[in-house]
Image (cartoon, rainbow, N blue to C red; front, side, top):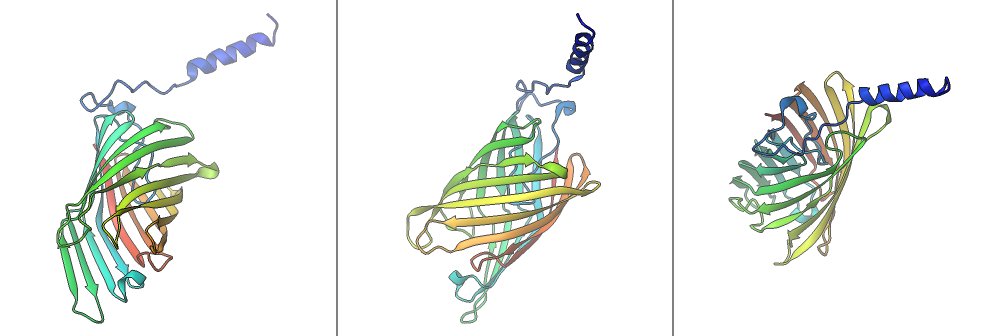
Length: 284
């Protein structure tokens, strides 16, 4: 063995023993939770509209909620000059890790209050429980490391709303979240979404296509921020294009608690004019 080969073999052997391969977590499930020491860094689907492909660890729970969110819409061409203001109090996404790469999500909107001001009619108020959504997230890769991550998230909406806050129809779709690490500490999230929703002008259904792209970065310490573009295109005849630009901040109080705040700003007439919010996420 020559003098060059021996140091190379020693270096390779040392690197092999020093490497820390990702542990096999496939044996963990809802009734056999992932040990705390093996849990991945907490990832949330909020506060941006671009969902994360990362799931909740098996046997653990995560709550993501708006403490309060307000929406103002005045220039929507479908509303004939009406101004609509909506408050949502404590909508919650409750998540449970079923397997190492699968979680279930239950979205509850316990109280929605809407005021519609019409120059040609009296003020209209609506309030009550809103629709209930069930989602399942399946991570295909990148859950426990890597520069990219990808998942699939089918969902169904059940019409549980009160006081005509929704369309009283079952709807559903498929969300396809993707994430990638970028140079200089930046991260990218992108998400196509394909929905089947009730027609607004007839009794049938039509497809809608949502696309988003979001860029995020740590700012200082536990404070991070993001900027996002969102658009929704309905294939119903005559439906307008909806698009927003969104900005927000997150702050990690601990490894299991995150605060957030932001605002979504409409850039088309069919989008809500503005939507500020504050929220919190925690897991256990």
